[in-house]
Image (tube, rainbow, N blue to C red; front, side, top):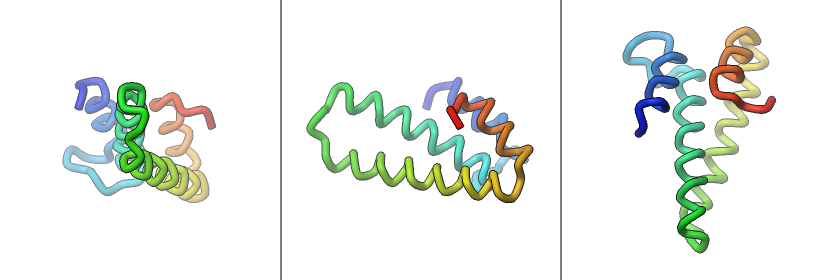
Length: 86
């Protein structure tokens, strides 16, 4: 994982070893989605990994809607830090 991606995960985590909060999971999924998107530029016929990409996008979408419903301030913070278009 690149240093910049790791830093965004650390910035959104609630504490140092946080991997379970919605913010940390959204950050991790965003880095996974960007990695898979780059992967598909080289390997266009990799259908098996495309299923993983769709699952990651859908999971991130569900987590964002959950965060928006329960903690609007944190949702806005995540959207701004990850440069998502919502």
